[in-house]
Every structure is written in structure tokens, then in C-alpha cells.
Length: 134
Image (cartoon, rainbow, N blue to C red; front, side, top):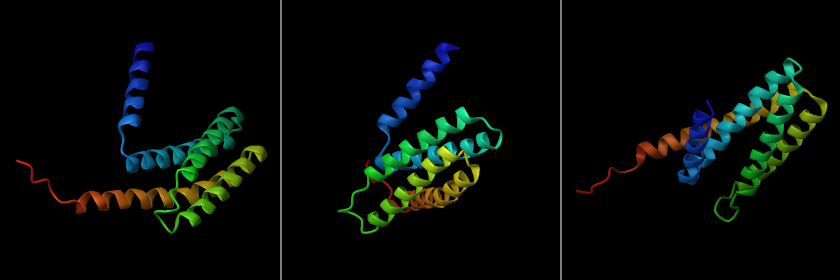
């Protein structure tokens, strides 16, 4: 069983290190939504250890997303920075208060953002010209 975990960990590590920046963004947003979903459910059954672990991980992801924004390339980066700061404050509040309602609010803020980035990635993928290499 330990061998399977080691192989899985290696696969995940390789996937992260070879992913494009766009793919990394999608991976982070997907994991953020998963962490929020699990934390919300854990709080619903009073599993405080799991909820806290997932909320702290979600905070780490939001901080990474916020710090990786390039304000020189995209005019809306400032607005996204404010959204990330707001979500971070809510995540901390949710963890301190052990409140699944606040986690749900975070999830409802983040999921549409994740879905929009996925839609943009699909659109970009379908509009790329076919390779003409021989």
C-alpha cells in the first residue's frame, strides 16, 4: 500500500511541475473548491480537525492565487486581489467560528470563478489553430 501512495505522490508532483501556468491555475481553483466542500461537510458533522486542516489549506491556496496575480498585465487584477482578500478574511473567520455557513459563502464566491476559468480554458483550447508541422 505504501508503494501505491509513493507512486501517487510522484505522479501528482510530476503533474504539478510539468503543468502550464493556466493548468496550474485550474488545479489550484479545483483544489480550493474541494477543500471548501470538504470543510463545510466536516463542520456539519463537528469534525473540527478535518475542517480546520481544509480551511488552512484553502487559505494557503487563496494566498498563492492572490500573490501570483500580475497587475501589470491585467487591469482587473486589482479587483481579483480584493476578492481574494475578502475570501481570505472569510476563511479565517469560518475557521475561528467553526461556521459552515461562512464556508458555504466562500464556496459560492469561488465556484463561479473556477467555472469561468475552466470555460476560458476550453474556449482557448477550441480556438487554437491546428499545428501544420509535417
